[in-house]
Length: 394
Image (cartoon, rainbow, N blue to C red; front, side):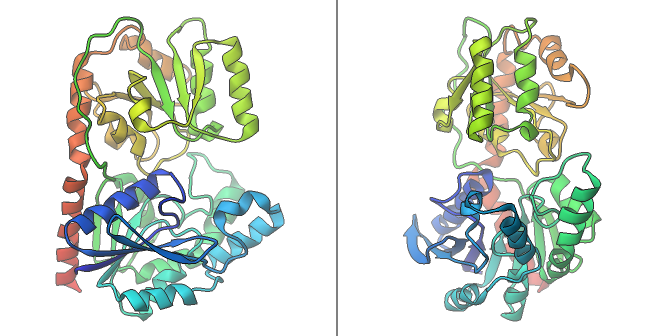
């Protein structure tokens, strides 16, 4: 299996989320090992480029509009878009033509929003082995995310009713990889991938660990949040905690969000100077400005890529007990876990471990050492093992 195709909704320079970074790291790592690697990704303009040894095909998948332009369209049009996507009513002819041109030995499908799960059927028709990497909840819910307690509408309409065809098409998959134990078990328990002969967990990767040195630091630890600025990510929760008089540590918020929500955060920061909106910055800048990362998500995250990125800078993490987040945190070694449903759980976690006063150097050392488990060369070898196994059983 020397000719590998990856399929993902976005690829550089489009999209800057965890799935895009993880897919790119995997693609380029395979290319560095001598594989012929191609990527098919969505765009509003069809084109082909080569990026770091990877041939990237940008295609229009024939839905009503390109997903990145969704904010320009009405709610009715958005719902129609989701119906087309969920039931595979889009045009996949261009996708099929490119696959036939590439002639891959195996296809690694990733996030499939915009492509729709019809690609599973197309690849099966072409008799190409499919290894699907579950990076979110797209197959189970059109929004790709799942709350702990979802409304009847979310569970039955945007979830179950719009996932019927996705579940059916998942039976064409030969092997399935979950980026966490949580995300793969969630899908298997709900009847997905019944015919997959390989079911495994392989985490996301980081390109490198950064040179780390524990330094003594005066002053109170600075806490940070990195990611989308919105309530479902737990931003309201942490802002409320750091707006209290009982905790005076600084909280730096890195990321972007809707204009109205970001303005709300700026209004809060004007009343509470210890809370600062820092905008979007590179990881190298972010993790040199903070001492502890907080991942307070209220949704069931499939993984939590920002956690392993923080570890690579020796930054310990306080994470919520949602989805795959707890799998990444070694309690009392690389960080701590709290329950957003329990009042004062976060602030108690901070104060009971004296994190508002200092950060134990051992936490930083353990965090940095943990990051080495997610290096691209370690993770890609796990994929090579799966390729070998898949070739034997097919």
